[in-house]
Image 1 (cartoon, rainbow, N blue to C red):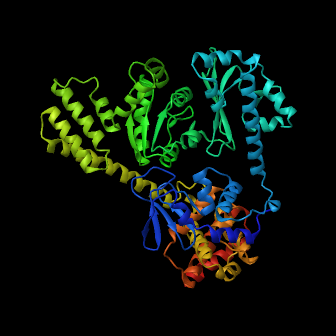
Image 2: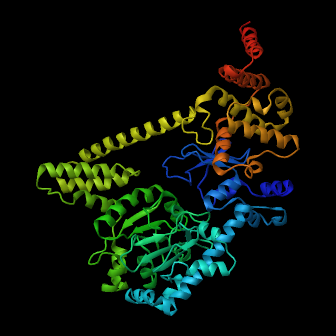
Image 3: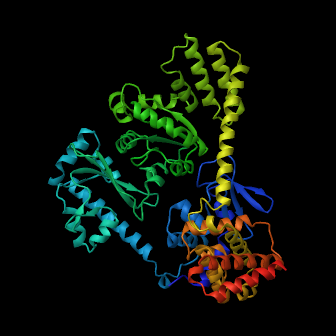
Length: 585
């Protein structure tokens, strides 16, 4: 059963979207609304809007939108009921759980239980006779027993059914194990352990739940590292290894590493602000997540070529999240773990404190392999350096580095600044062109994944959206509109469903704000409804306007009917032609 209407209205009344969003986004007043940099994608100009009048938000940059429940779902990576509980706890409300039948929430809870039992199993195996190889590996890596215990490290036995058999005895089904991705279905149809013969690293979210695992082979098996695939409780692009510990350091700095072992070695050496991505390149959501707990990021990747390329890719993502970025180049060792073993934590701290910022790192990379005594290579270096400085937003910062470059190359600072300005102008043009194309495509429905029928029925879809926005703002007009325009007249399926649900709720006397609709739609669908509201912000339709849009939908519906003339009766065609004659008069 859905949540009671009275509870949802009380929750909505106590949870002000602007107040809650301000904990995650810096907002400024813009007329009746609030604007800020979007927390859901990287941007330099604010396109994230909050509309206090209807309790909705919408980002014109990435197309994300919704109500306060949707906002918390996205920002905290929660499902619907988890977001409701999160907000209810904040507002001091008790969720009427007995009336809720939420299958997805139950499945997520079940998967989290499986993960917890799995982590305990791997840890127990590591400390048994069957875990000897795992213990030897951790001993070789010089991990202390308390470090192993702190991170809950374990070992998956070589047997292909040890975990599955244990979980079955505890009452979990094979299908649940497969959904949790701790097992997979064999050709015979039986569930088989996903991880075997590997040292295991539990991945824990910010609420302390084991959500996934990483496993490292001790032999020649491929892949070397095997990670949990995405599940209902795990999205690898939204989490960071060990952030559950690092966030409690009360430090404004995080150290970003490549691998689990680097992070664990740093924590053991006293650098508990270390985190790592989960076997993939850094993502924008991960950068924004770090920005919630730190102001500065030290990128501490391996000193080999792949590690340095990964560092170069990470820098703009971190900068776009508003973070100060420094880059630590480990000397005398391939990775931080090896460096600490060879030189000790004190030397590593000296290296950490002395590392340069990302601009210096990128300029050094631009100079690498070029002989500045050769004019052609000096020009190449200066052009490459100018393109780096063109990515900086701060003019003073640009001029400081331009002065250094000019002195180094023996040319005027103004010459360097002119080249930087030229690159900056080119970058802005590219960005503006990209944004303009995106806006055009969105207006034409070409990028509308929620309502793919819009592009082929643009005139009708625009009219449908205008009426939907009008009903959400003025639900009292629903009876008059519904009497003239039944849902089946709508051309596009998505808009038809939205219209039918809104009219149905109003008819029953229920509220129709976005928060009231969010249980009925997916997050992407709520974003689409939020876009419809944002597009009509500040526009109030008169009754003649409403009739005009109703007429457009009716006309387009008639055209669609006639286009299927093979299945239409002759009298229906005549009726349509008669309507056209009347319109011309």
